[in-house]
Image 1: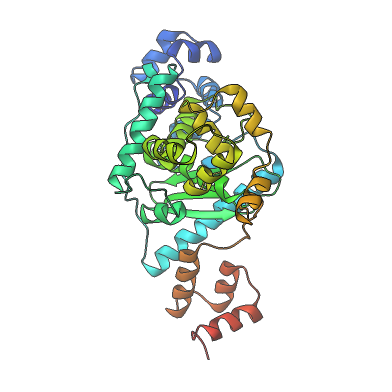
Image 2 (image 1 turned 180 degrees about the vertical axis):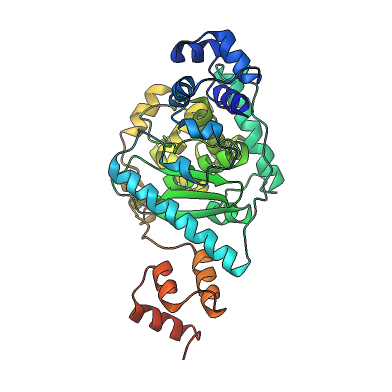
Length: 371
């Protein structure tokens, strides 16, 4: 079990046995024997191996699922963000409590897709082909055709993912995905970001759900603003999947020929990004990856304020619109259902819905749940 987990994580991050051995201070042969189950590492060595993957030694020894603990294991976010993640974890526990209380537990529906061969992870072209095929296979399974995905959050809930949107102002964390074999899949989306960026984040995390949910991994930051590419192969694949899932090449090609018969400028990019429901930046990088614009043009387009262009064209922009904090609709329904079935008290309902008693009485009265 320990060796299997080490091998799975090593291959996910495209590391060789020799690279792990150097980081830990042991021989390549030792790592090979551990992965094959022929040797067990000491606690000291196991702790060093765990640190390579930003995990704790207990992860490799515990035969039980980690029960959401992985979302907290990262040194890449500050204490304020960690507190937000703790709130997310607690919310996941409440969500599952309500499912158990009402008997309406959401089970994973989507299949688990196989990982790519570790040999291709250092080759961008082959990694891209794998990610594109994964995205197109999933679109095909969902019968999406070439149409844009209008509500990716609802789509994911139909596939067994509970989506939680929390306002995390000034946080570098766009989203996170955590999974427990017993309790299922939960996704955090930073609702302080624009709607288009939230869509890309959701698609990125959905990739983790489709191929990584049995592995467990730390919270990830989604890069859509051009500040750099993810270094870990597991994150690079998720970004490439998101681009292909939200903006299929065939559909982009048709619209480019329709909107931009001569050349692509900011107004054409704005039209395209509105059609696909993504951010201006995500659309630009997709067009670059598909060969429709080159690096100098990309840099020029990135200097333009898309909100100004969008307002001039359509009188309204979603680039600056911030989504208010709100609880998931299914969660609220389950909470009220648990209360009306006598499974939880009025006080517990107020706590779960995060409202005071007076507001709750008014809401329940208007809904006809109490006199």
